[in-house]
Structure formats: C-alpha cells, structure tokens
Length: 102
Image 1 (cartoon, rainbow, N blue to C red):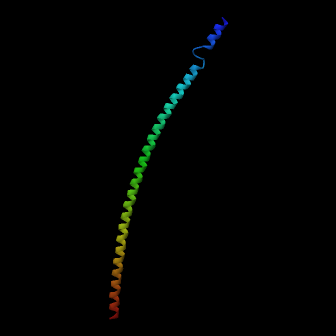
Image 2: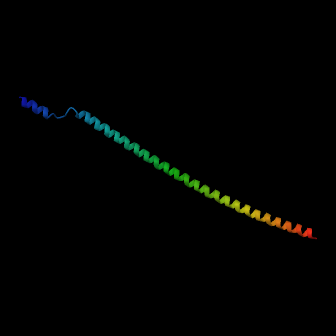
Image 3: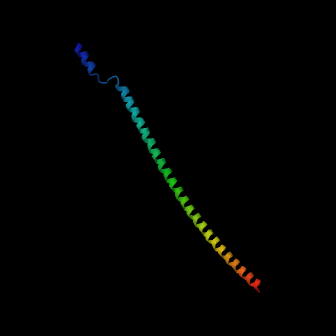
C-alpha cells in the first residue's frame, strides 16, 4: 500500500508550482506583446518625426537659396548703382575742372 501512495505522489498530474508558472508565463507573454506594440508605435513616430524634420530641412534649404539669390540680385544692383554714381561723379568733376581752367 505504501508503494501506491509513493507512486501517486511521484506521478501527480499537475505540480503545485504549475499554476504560478502558467500565470507567470501568461504575464510575460502579455508584457512582451505590450512591449512589441509600444516599440512599433515608437518606430512609427520616429519615422514620422524624421520625415517631418527632412521636410523642414528641405524647406529651410529652399528658403536659404531664395534668400541668397535675392541678396545676390540686390548686391549686383547696388554695385551697378555705385558704378553709375562713380561715373556721374567723374563726369561732374571733369566738367568742373574744365570750367575752372577756362
């Protein structure tokens, strides 16, 4: 009879720790799924932010090129005006010199 009890104890269909281990495994599985969802959300947000940053950078570069072109046009116009004024001044000085010699 003692051997029957020994066999029953050894061959218990579900050990005492099994429910805890099962709950722990379910918890870990749920946590892994939540982590995967968070990671996917974070990855999507990072890609969206990178795309937005690239759009802003491109817009900023375009604005800088436009501003550079406008500045160059103003500089060229200013240089031309300065040359014209210098030529007018030179002409005026010549005229004044010619009058003073007479």
